[in-house]
Image (cartoon, rainbow, N blue to C red; front, side):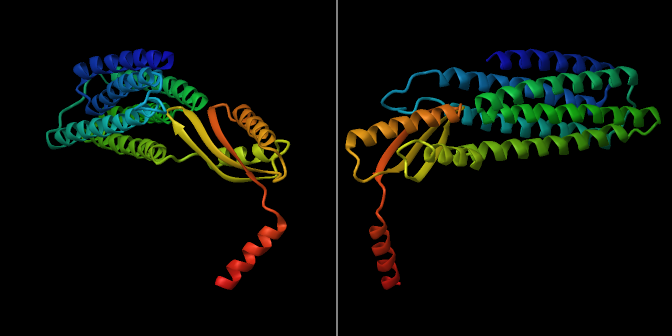
Amino acid sequence: MRTLRVSLAALALTACAQLAVVALSGSVALLGDALHNAADALTAVPLGVAFILGRRRPNQRYTYGYGRAEDLAGIVVVLVIALSSAGAVAAAVQRLLHPRPVTHLAAVAVAAAIGFAGNELVARYRIRTGRRIGSASLVADGLHARTDGFTSLAVLLGAGGAALGWRWADPAVGLLITVAILGAGWQAGRQVLRRLMDSVDPALTLTAETTLRAVPGVLGTGQVRLRWIGHRLRGECDIQVDPETTAAAAHRVAVEAEHALIHAIPQLVAAAVHADPYPAEGADHHALLADHVSG
């Protein structure tokens, strides 16, 4: 929440400064950049609502809690990116059809530099926090801000072209900025879609399997499932123990395995670990023989 508040204030100030220069200069490239910065600032609102909802306790209807609200907020972020790019395209095409000179080029250049600095600082802050807490939506929003920073630098090209008397340079740069915005939207959308499909980094699954096998009493592992609920992970894992062990001993091994997983994966808040008897060699041989005969 602190990250959202700081980034909202920083990007709002950046967008306001750029819009003031747009009113003076008439730069459509700077207008596209300012609109995108304003949209990026406003994406903090749905993310903030999602984080607040995620604090609510699970109940009989939402037994896993409200963490999935973050994924819905990620969809809103992607839609805002798409809408802001549409607005930038409309302004650029209109200026190409009806060109007019851009004034106050020095102010445009300064505003572009401010836009790059503000977006890069916000991007680093959001991405660092998002990766630390495991929030795909916050990381996507940070990548969005980073792209905005580079599009701010592109505004300098438009100002340079305008200084040479090329009226088409400013709206052309505006269209290039739109392409960059769409690229950021695609990257953010893919990340959010993967999260909605319960995708996890394969390295996390490998870490879970390795951690389970290292627990004393675990002879093997079965299925290992991990899923994100907001920016928290939950797991369902099968382990194999000595078939001669007692139920109480198998339970102790399962509890130790859960504790080891939570220690090894910081974002993991709970894991349901089920203990199965380790299959004997004879059982494996008979099963393979039966498969061969049936084949």
